[in-house]
Image 1: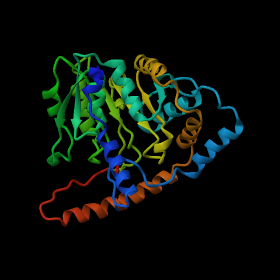
Image 2: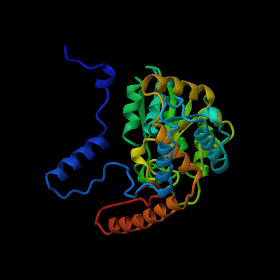
Image 3: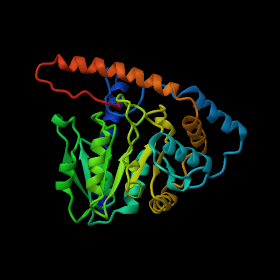
Image 4: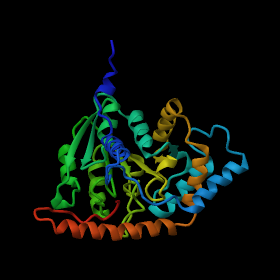
Length: 323
């Protein structure tokens, strides 16, 4: 009998990837297509990052399997970045480097969720959140943020959505797809609701943190009591134009990081050794190339927003981040 597992039958193909495949198909047939599918920079990876990868190949020291959680120096650098820039006291033991932020989220959900659990998903949301919850055999509960609040879910909405089955709350800030950014006060209010319930954890997707136009970067893990309750997800794809390098990471309390490491050890093992050396150069090197990209995104935001406002009947928020 040709039947896939229930967990696979419960999820859909990634809508983003399906759109991208359709766009490629049209282009191969000579059709002029503008693809608005993948969240992918149209910039090249900065030169100093590429040079680090070339050097790693030439050195000949990175041909063996890396540690499952990633090289120690990269994990230490990521922890130091969060200590300095985000005010979160992560150590190397809290970091697991994965094959992209998507795997980091999947690792966390598979490590933490059981079939009776519920996951509150702030909506609008990145398409894979719902699918990854279902893959872990839990139930997604969508809470919708309206245009009147810049598409952001409020702490009051969160409070109403929490049940005895709630295990995880997941959101991104800056948000994919809306570009909305939660302020410090808004995140503080959300943290306040989370801390009322001992069993609830947060997955905070910060993959777009460098592409922000407000000047304020706030990690929910930095609030008192939230370090122990937060799984921070990040990576190099967006801020460093490294989508194809496939380097993401999770930063979490050690017991959760250990669980993610265990899952990853059985599924894929470590991330590519050369990509990790490139990532180390990205996180420790010059930030100016990223800043130049952000300046360009800011200009594009203004152009698109102004054009949208000219269309009769169209309403639009003014995104504070992402692209």
